[in-house]
Amino acid sequence: MKICVTLVMSAGILAAQTAPKNPMIETSKVVFGIAKNDILKSADKIPDELWAWKPTDSVRTFGQLFAHIADGQYEFCGVVSEGKMVDKGIEKSAKGKADIMAAVKEAFAYCDAAYTKMNDTNAADLVDFFGGRKITKIGAMDFNSAHTMEHYGNLVTYMRMKNIVPPSSQQ
Image (cartoon, rainbow, N blue to C red; front, side):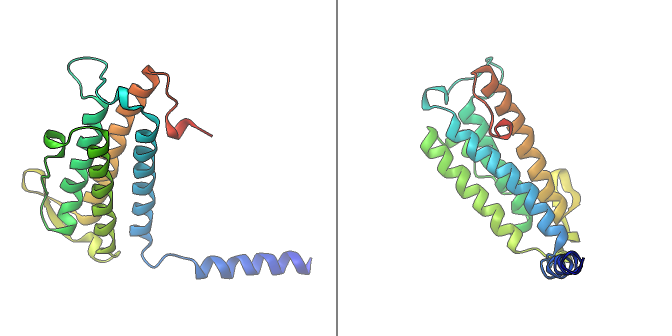
């Protein structure tokens, strides 16, 4: 019984010591990390010969989706980092898997850096967003994660059409 009580008390003390300093930011970062991980692992699974494939003429190719995701990182995280949406034009300019994935990794690092500029207090600061709307900094960052996962959903559909198991479906 003493061992059980000691373990429970130790777990409580440990949990109190590991509570994040900025739980709102840390939670948002976890969701962003899931999105980032799914995108990066998807790129690893898609062979080079499928990079220009798309299911119909009216949608983006695999490569264009990844480039679009990279552009989104700058647009949405830019309002935190620079006070404005940033247009890098990656989807229009990047060519080939190596070029696009280098841009994607750099874009994710840009958002990682934006998180370091935030705490639970300034996360509530309002910034300009689409069409002059105001949104909180954390809202812009969470919108970025939602946008990234929206396009991860596109990638999942494409991968399934090519008999590739998406990263989030693997054990």
